[in-house]
Image 1 (cartoon, rainbow, N blue to C red):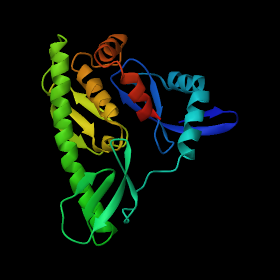
Image 2: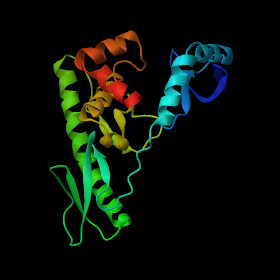
Image 3: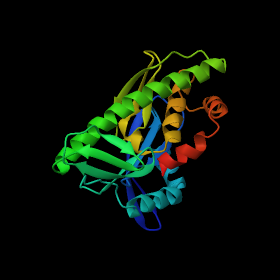
Length: 226
């Protein structure tokens, strides 16, 4: 499907879901994706997109103008960890991957070795961090008087979502790519998904609970949206 703004045509993809409102977002690669209620007529979706065409077009241009972050894992290259830059350094001798004073040291003879070492280290860091935050967020909800389960965490590399919640099974899926973003963003996604244990939508009540328990939510959500 398409919408136009100032003579330029933009394409977008639509995903149907059980939800009340239409939501449009622009990915980091500049593609436009729309989530719409299952039975929303195409004419209503088109009208929504045309109404917000100016904002969406600006975000597409902004995304397309940003250089893509693609580390090449050469010695001295830059990687991102929790929103901060770190310099990647190769060690010619076998060693444990460590991050100290902004330098990530890995055992590597070439870029492929460096990438493998980096990824193994990052997976371990991710699992430990997500488990810690999961317990912390669950505890905070319970202490605030909300009945929520301790979620079972599933870590994935997702392209279109930062996280998702399956309230019936008590499972939350979290995006591995969040490890590149500030810690507050990871907390924001966890708090967001936990709120879905009470509201399986994005209603005003949902955001009232979310913003009440995590006042910084909007600040970090903007970072992820941009």
